[in-house]
Amino acid sequence: MAIPSLASYPLPTASAFPASKVSWPVHPSRAVLLIHDMQDYFLAFYGVDSPLSQALLARVGRLRAWARQWGIPVVYTAQPTEQRPADRALLNDMWGPGLTAADPALQAVAAPIAPEAGDTVLVKWRYSAFQRSNLEALMKQQWGRDQLLICGIYAHIGCLTTALDAFMRDIQPFMVGDAVADFSAAEHQMALNYVAGRCGRVLGVDEITALQPLRPTREWLTEQILARLPDPLDALDPDENLMDYGLDSVQVMSLVAEWRRLGVQLRFEDLARLPTLNGWWAALAGAAQAQAPALAA
Image (tube, helix red, strand yellow):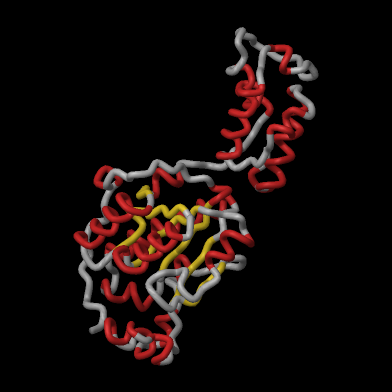
């Protein structure tokens, strides 16, 4: 049986998301964005000028733009037009011939979010994006990443299966609850409930994109240091050892952790090497330049 014609429904808001059992924070340095099956073929089942398709494309576009800001790898899945019976196998029994019997032009990813240079496009053979692909190897071996942000269609089929498969491979899955779409609102909600309670975390586009890369300035760094000193000060000698002001190693490690979450990959040793305002500014600006040249101060 083929996919039925699908009616639009309002995408859920973050206030309607189920509470997730885990509270994993998104770390851009560990994340990969997966744009799942956003092909014209699958979107066509919602009909021409579908409000749901338009809202979904806009939100996936926001996620992709955010990922590019951070230098996060963007991965697409797309089913091929030519699928031998042996390749399609049981999918034939469940869904019919699929793209093989459709207009080959429908195989393309929707134009507003089409892959660009540097993106990865995986051939999609089964519900899970990991099945018969090198997604796990890319994440763990090539990119050194262990978080997967999932958006696209359909929520209760491929998106959910991919999230569960990621969990079983020790990759933290995040379902972007208002950037996936489904056969119905009920099945959409079922997918969010399952991920939130069994294998991952459900987040919204606004919450994810609110996390912006660090654009460090010397003034900002000075404020960061002054806020952690035991005695109030208005200024710092740029060449004075910061430990002489009362800063300790625990506070330095907390700064490193906070900055790493904001996209700057510094280590405790990098700051301990020259613990002055001038030394830290040189280290911070250099790390920001290396990680995201367009965003460096």
